[in-house]
Structures are given as structure tokens and as C-alpha cells.
Length: 200
Image 1 (cartoon, rainbow, N blue to C red):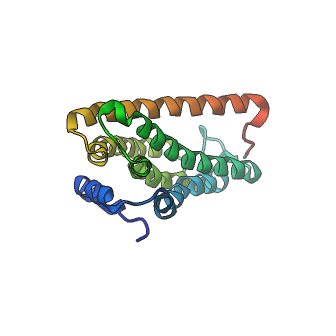
Image 2: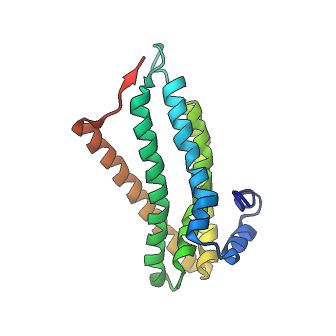
């Protein structure tokens, strides 16, 4: 089923993680029915929102991205999300033995993919790039993503909750470092003349 498990992760997450664990889904199928579709939400919404709606600074006219600038940025953002999910999954697999787990590689990528579900879905706010709206809706989505990580990792890795808590904290730390690295890379690219082009 397309986008299976999404509703369950919000209505009964523990039971749904058990179902995901026993589904033995492959990485390819997980990407085909989950990641490729959901990761497109923030990319498409961001493109439409920044080129058609724009955002206002003070009382001026809306600032928008030029379409020929927004297109490559949205495509690169989409690619970064796809690579990011797989990379976090590989990092979980690499760290597994440290915490007494012996995970299958596909389980680790699937854990990363389903954990990111709230962040993918909240990307719909990109259609209306209003900072306060994104913060009000984005912070709970981020908090629920962290909750899914701490709930799902012990189940998917088949380890006790205490080690699962430590393992989840390590994964969260890696994710934050990756985010900072991505922001730094973006700033460097902009400084090298690859900054977006704006219109009013």
C-alpha cells in the first residue's frame, strides 16, 4: 500500500514500529512507496511558495525567488533529503554494534525514513513561506520526529529501552551535526557566487 504505516505512526506509534519491523521491507521498496513521495512535499511546496507567493519583509512588496533559481535549489534540496535519509540509516547501522544491536542494513535505513515522516509532511507549509507559521507548526513536527526516533529505535534494533535511549541520543547528535554541516555548505556555496536570485 502506498504510504503505509504513516497514519499508524501518529495514532499508535509503538504498535506501528512493531509492524514496520516485521514487514521486512527492502530499502528500494521503502524509498519507492515512502521516501520518494514524501520528500517531494517540501521540495515542491518550497518551489511554489517561493516563486508564486513569496514572503514580505516589513511593509514592502513580497520577495520571491526567480523560477530559474528556485528550480535547481528545489531539486538539490530533494536530492539532499534522499541522500540524508540513506546516510543517517548507514550511520545507525555503523553505530549498532556499539550499543549491543546487530541490525540489518535495510532496517536502519527504514528507521531513518519513517522517523523523518513528520518533517516531510510539515513541508507543506512551504506553500505559504510565513516565518511564524513555519515555526508554530515546525517545532511540534520536529519534537514528534525526535519522539519517533526514541520510540522506534529500541524496537527496530531489538535492544532494551535503556540502551535504546543512549543509541537514539547518539543518532540525534549525528543528525544535528549533519544539519549544521549542511547549513555551512550552503553558506559557502552562496559565498562562491551560487546564491539564489530574488525578484519583487
